[in-house]
Length: 230
Image (tube, rainbow, N blue to C red; front, side):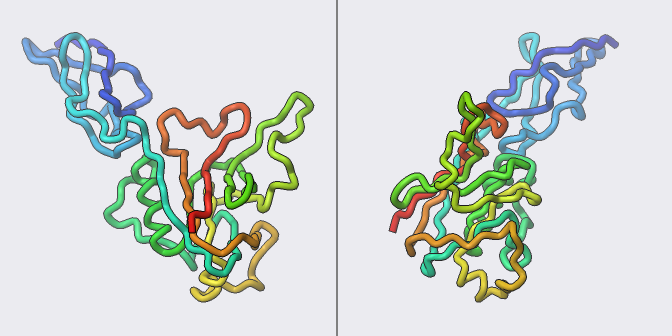
C-alpha cells in the first residue's frame, strides 16, 4: 500500500482547512480517506469526492458559490424598535430540520426563521456593532473603522444603539409586539435600546454569509443594510 497527499479541487465548496487530503493506494485502486474532509461550510453537504487527474475533486458544485445574502422584512407598526443581541425566549425559532447553524446555509435559515416570528436577527460574531442612521429611512448595522486620528468613520451622533454581542448576533423587533408576546420593559437592561423610527416595513439585507465577507476587515464593516420600504 502506498500513501500520498493530493490537492483538493472543491468545486466551490469550503471543506476542511487542509488544501490536500490523504489517499491510500492498494494495488490498482486508490481509496480516499473519507474522514479527512468535512461538510461544506457553506451548503452543509458532504460532496462526493473522487480521485481524478492527480487531484481529489468534488463531483457536484456548491449550490451557493457566492455565499448567501439573506433578505427579510420586519414590520414596525409602533414606530419603536427594541434593539439588542438576544430576544429569547420571547422570540425564538425551532431549528428542527434546518442546516447546521455553523454553516452559511444554517445561519441564513435561522435568519429567515426568526423573521417569521417577528424578529430581525443576524449573526455578527463577537463584534459589538451599532445601529447607525445613514439618511432618511436608511440604516446600517456596522462596526466603524477609524481614520488617521483614530476617530470613528461613522459619526457618533448617527449611532442609535450599541449591541453587546453576548449572543454574537443582533436581534430587533417591534417593541409593542415584543411586549404583547410577554416582554417586560421593566426587565430591560443597559444593553437593550428602544429606538424611535418611522412606522412601517423595513427590509434587512444581511451580508455575513457572502463569500469573502470578513468581519475583522480594516475599515467600516457593514453587517446589514436596513431600509424602510413601506
